[in-house]
Length: 132
Image (cartoon, rainbow, N blue to C red; front, top):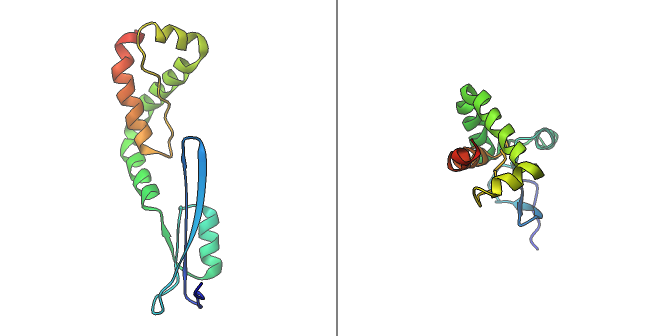
């Protein structure tokens, strides 16, 4: 393995699929490059970047999620109400009753994943007539 030298970057990533969680670390280096850290926009990574005295290149997905949440902020009361309903529909008695009318499952919102808000609203639209 080639030595990294004094200028290098570290890229962290983590994801999950089918209940399995993965974490990886990539060293990135070029002879004429500045050092950097690519990772989530969390305090831990910010602290590491400061201590290494290198810039943190924040995760584009997280920045996009922040932007979507800001865009959706005026509708937060309605989105929270829909999420509360979805949580209630997951409860055993409500879930059994829902299954009498549709095979579709309720979808909860995960505020760190903008797409889950979209999926939750989409599902509400599809099962809404069945739960009235």
